[in-house]
Structures are given as C-alpha cells and as structure tokens.
Image 1 (cartoon, rainbow, N blue to C red):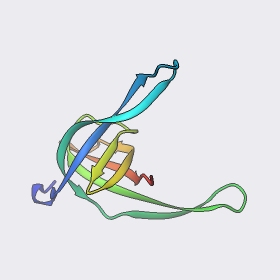
Image 2: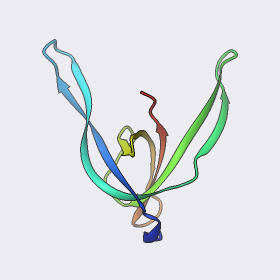
Image 3: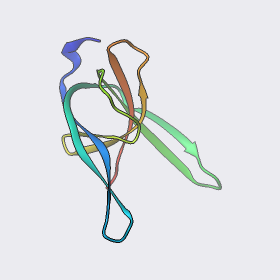
Image 4: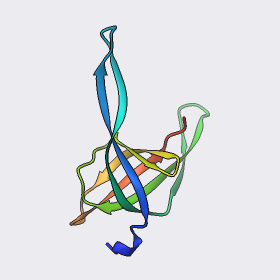
Length: 104
C-alpha cells in the first residue's frame, strides 16, 4: 500500500440499535473514527432480476489501513454515504472495502 494514495478523509460509522418507547428498536449510525483512504475504480455490473427487471449495480472499492470494521457499517465522504458490503482483510496491514452508495 502506498501511503501517498491515501488522500481521501472518510468517516467510518457503526450501526447502533436503541430501544424505543414502543418496545421496538431504532437503528442509527454513530461515528467510530476518521481515516485516510484511497478510492479505487468503481465496478459496474448489469444484473437481470426475476422477470423483466434489470439493475445496474455500482460498487466502490475503498482501501485503507487496517481497522475493525464490518459489513453493514457506513462510510461518509463529501456528502456521499456508502454501505459496506464486504471487507477484504487478505493483505497484511490494509483492508479493501466493497461498498455501494446509499441513495436517500
């Protein structure tokens, strides 16, 4: 990993579940930490869903130094929110996140 490529400041948010007054759960995210990261080239893939439905799936790879993070967490960068789909820990000292942008 080339440290000079870690040029994007990201916020890593972990999911938090709290009980509400009706006996249910409220899901939210809280900031775990800020990190420097490298954004890799996006991956575009077309998929056919059941029936005639088609979907274009765009995933974004993000490389950063090793930290505890799991699928389901969120990455925030310049007003964009990405959901972590997969965490690749196969390289020593770094992780590569496969993410998909969340459309609010």
